[in-house]
Length: 235
Image (cartoon, rainbow, N blue to C red; front, side, top):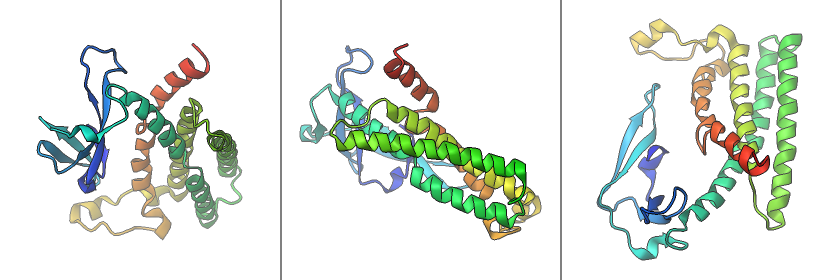
């Protein structure tokens, strides 16, 4: 499994493993809870461009797992996975975090003299409308959850739009701070990576690049569109 976030700190891991090689794609899979210290489990770091160790490869070679660590029925693991993925995608929408980020973005725009810029203010207004629509969609999903039905394919809508909003927020921060978002080449070569410009600019570019991942994890947005086409639109 590639791109496993913070696996280097995990004591236990959930794994989907094929237990019936003759079953079709989404059947014949079991859901196992595995102690990460089990012989044969290897976590290999993937160091990203900024030098951070956030993601990993996880390898399983001849790993033996007690049958009591199986979750749900044998060969029915995808049922568990679909349930968890629906909740994960609902959570990825990140409405509360985006609302806080929008408040900070408005403060940055004010500090950068963009409060009266009609073009930038239009971009902020468009983003706020998108975020408000996302919030109401999430509230409908939560109402469904409270009635015991759980999130359905609409969680894919939340995942797509939520990550698009998150990425747009970071794009506008970079646009607002302008040249201060660029790394200083001389500072990089000398090893002195101290912030240049206003304090809010120092994390603009790193955050922008890191947030490119949001449209991929939890099932890429392209996959989510396929789910919507099949499960919601019936195409």
